[in-house]
Length: 118
Image 1 (cartoon, rainbow, N blue to C red):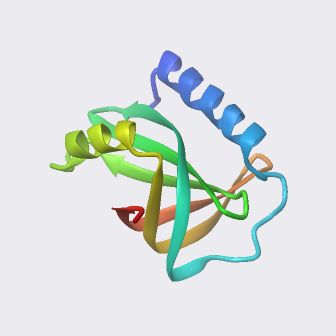
Image 2: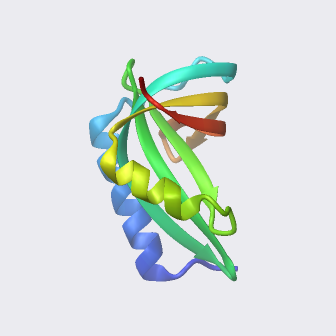
């Protein structure tokens, strides 16, 4: 299924902003398994693929790497998360961070949990 063009454009524009803020040109050394990273919230996007809706939240690590944390629309906590992310800028991401590369755009894709930074 093809994503809608306006949503694709917004997601692409936000990726360009993340590229300017973070070091996304250098390949990452590998995946980080069962780790906790302190991150700063940057931006969020939404994409529809058929009936599925995914929210991608972009963060920056202390060593200036980009991290994508994705939540699906059917997650019952998606609205609460959206409210918290607008009020708080610093978080801890806990879980597995997979080395991802797409068109010279290197970042971590996080599969795990998010917590408020203390």
